[in-house]
Length: 370
Image (tube, rainbow, N blue to C red):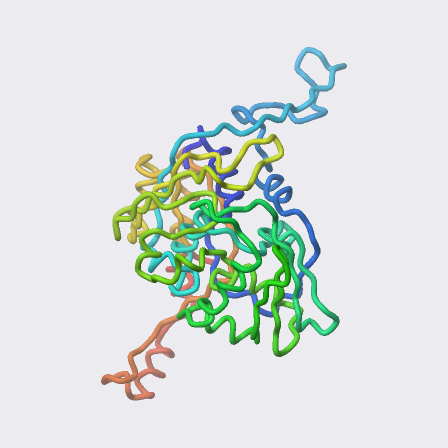
């Protein structure tokens, strides 16, 4: 992204959890924190990390001003500017906009997290903490998890978010192409509304890692269950509680989301999020073309999972290009697949030979080096 708008855009990306390079499950993570931490404060802190509210040259608190060594200079924090639009180059088109139904990789996640909020989010220390939930706790054997939703949250169509919403989502998620697998893997059997804002998740087998599932896209992203009854219509008009809402979608060309005026999140300066008016997501499959679009200013942000592209972007930056790299070490894995139903790959000897012929060192170098 261009340096002139670096900090406000970085704040947006962090606050809205636009995923730079992470997908896949976190089952088995032992860093579960089911306490009632307020992630709104955590998000603000992350979003403002390194932001001096100006041109990047403001002195830090305690620095000595030139010519007046006896005077301490205090940093002045200001609310980030609001308004404007950005264009984000993605590595692929999103398969769909239905969290419980569509297989979602990083490009899809970048879009979905602008439209939908998660029940649980990970904080800067890697702990799972409530987000749309205000609190989350379990019984002694971790078979029943009880949560309380934030009050006053509404969907982008004005309907309130209640505990019954979460309960009504469950049968839809349980029959979804992606939701069903996650629900089975965490042994979730019931979701009940025990009060206006109180929700209960019942598991057939105890799990200390269940909060991680409530942060995952198929189970954790909150959608309007009545609108979801029509799968195709929901894809054209997704209804969530997220900071943005869908304005237009031209497959393989551009998806545009605009500011949700009903969004619940207010930063510590009293400014209602999101800061931007709109985001345009453009699928640009070719890695070189996507990086060139960023360098030329055709896009403001480029998302990638490729080591080679990160290496090239670093080189451009070090060579003077006015870009900033926000890098995240994710948990993705890659692999090669053979169609074992057709010759010659139906012969295990052929597959084994191809694997042994593959130089691991050369693959690593081609992907971007060690």
